Amino acid sequence: MNKIKKYRFDIIKYLFIAGLIVLAIVNFDRLKNIFSYLLTISMPIILGFIIAYILNIPMVMLEKLYFPNSDSIVVKKTRRPVSILVSIIIITVVLIFILNLVIPQLISVFGRIIEIIPVLANGIQSWVIENEEIFPPLAEFVETFQIDWQNIVTNMISIVNRFTTNIIETTLSTVGSVFSIVVNLFLSLMISLYVLMSKETLGRQFRILSETYLPERGHKGLMYVLEVTDYSFRHFITGEVLEALILGSLVTVGMWIFQFPYASMIGALTGVTALIPVLGAYISGAIGFIMILVDSPIQALTFLVFIIVIQQLEGNLIYPRVVGGSIGLPGLWVLISITIGGGLLGIWGMLLAVPLVSTLFKLLKNDIEYRRNNRYQEQEYVDVVEEINESDELKVND
Image 1 (spheres, rainbow, N blue to C red):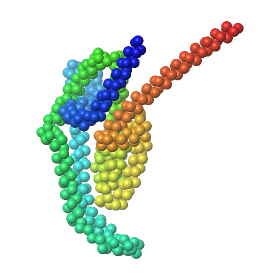
Image 2: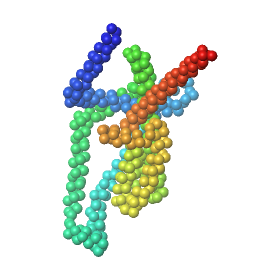
Image 3: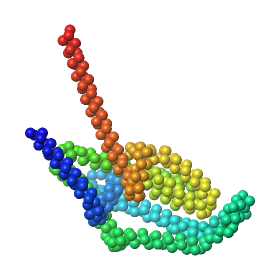
Image 4: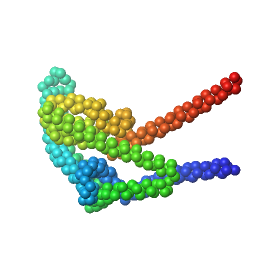
């Protein structure tokens, strides 16, 4: 009778779940709109927790350095506020330094590219005409082919201006206004400061809620998943930042040694784009190649060889040791996760995909090891029982 009741309960449960899935599929557009609305409302809270998580990494390090052996009450009370303040100052100064270094140079180079395109095109056209015996049909075509470069440059500037205007308008329409951006950022910063100042209390309250409303197995499972997720994201962030510093320094020093132009700017850009796993170095290399090409095509080709060597060094030595080893994710899965994450969510997808896949990979790996160990233990137990039974049978026969 109990088995029949359990069987009926299971059928009702699965039918209920199937019904919910069907309703979700039928009302997908409504659910999507509701989810987008809730996400927009809760964005300052989400952003606040993200800022708190990132600031927590340098904050913990600074707390260990802030008079670690002191028993003073003043030191204990000021340890966390001072560590938070210094963390914010360090990150802000680094961001301002990089933006001031990269953006003006990019604007300058873009202007030079627009100016030099007609010169390069006319030079190529003249060279083809002068060497018409090598490519007679091409020389004949180039000689009769005329381009209004002034009109093209004007159109390019117009396209860039429209593109920039569209980005600004889209951003403003998404968040409402500049005022709402400032308010949301301020709220996010306040939330992050509150979370950092009382993270132990919040953690304790969360554990109490989990222990109270979840069964023991569910509570332990949730804590385990959160610990693995925290480990993956924390080591990914620290590993990526360290790898970006190493790669940016290598590119900067190497460019100074080989006397390439824009050494500081391209080095800083390489460090920033290196935060995008694997693909970041290629992005900065392509931008650097175009920038140097404006000044000297020969140096641009030499830089291309230099950046390929650096990328091989980064991909085969630096990244696997600094980041790959810290998150425990094989290189193939890193590339797959970046590809899928980038396709779904763009750059944010590339940044989040690696630690998320690393978390799933670690959970799956640990679960497989746990199941295999249990299976081996069960098999060993069966073997021991069989040996005992065989020995008992031999004794009986004797």
